[in-house]
Image 1 (cartoon, rainbow, N blue to C red):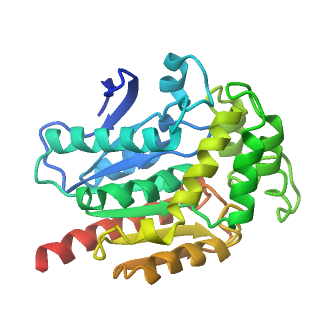
Image 2 (spheres, one colour):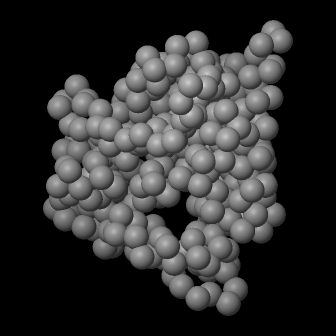
Length: 309
């Protein structure tokens, strides 16, 4: 069963939230989703439907500047006038609080994909005690020279205008390792239908604003800051999943570098699962059922481990 509603934030912004659940059943856990850049939460319907069949209920929202939230906001690809990355992160925390109000004493996990993984990494720097574990899908590591340059470059353009230059610089190399390319978005997944669905979706693939890229670069700088990473509780379970053909993770190099950041900070429960021939969107890959079960098994194992402690 699905339910959708609008959640009012402290600044009076309305955030679109979707909930997948089974009435009159008690879940073993809740998974909160944080979707990626220039997409929206409806794209996770198949994955959420799988989870509720296994008694894991799912919540997810359209970030500011995305999907129905961005549509109501009046501008896709724009997070906020300033501090957009932090504001969107705090929106996630408001959803967490709603989850805990709806289902007290039920374990809550978070899955962030791509930009959502960056938001998740920011989230745990302030709220790691609020969730029972976090999964990072399609995450990466970015050298300071790239993020600082991107931030400065973004600041040179009108903040509310689509920034085609930054958009090009972000994506231009992502398809380079894909053989027999059929579209410019083949790097997303080897599932051709999923790529076409993305290309036909009005809520996907738009060009974000200059301010969006400024906020994104600022956020990535923060999530890779070692002092900020130290604030995360050491026993927070962390699972990183990536395809070995994902350019966002630099074909696994960035995933391992990200794990190293958390390992250096003393985090004790880090797991990595690399999927062979997987591209950026593992949840839409041709073998997505394997990915679904891998995530489900990790959540259940963490629940069982915690209950036995």
